[in-house]
Image 1 (cartoon, helix red, strand yellow):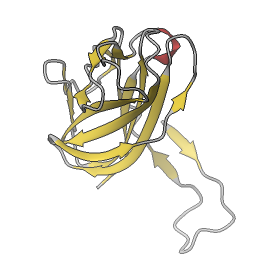
Image 2: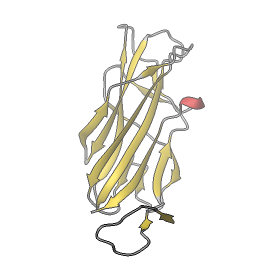
Image 3: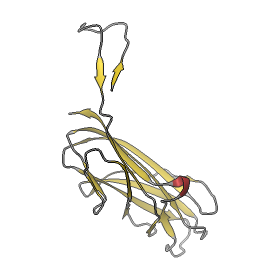
Image 4: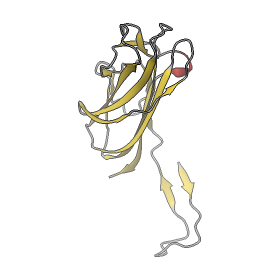
Length: 173
């Protein structure tokens, strides 16, 4: 894909046109089924359906994406959680991005939709410098407002609160 950038002046002048080439290939994976999690425990999210994996580097057995080449990458995830209407007072879903098996970054904000299933979602986007061979995975940590048994907490894989992740290379190094 090529795009046209129109400007009044280019200094130093190198021509009359600039062509920007981007990588249209992106990785996208999501959940189709719910995943049980425990209150307050970071749990690796099983993303069970691949939408796009142009480099074929997703490992469904490890739930990890292997970076195909050095560069600057936008890493995004949306994780939804619910308690299946057990009135647990689900308070938050913390999204965690792991790099090579260690916590790289996390997002603590959440949106509670307050419906029957106490749906909570959290979106996290980061731009990270990554190297070929780096492995990215996503974790979720749920917190409840009440100390009831946490056996009914789930990462959502159904409805409009689907959990998903994508990675897009924005620049080469």
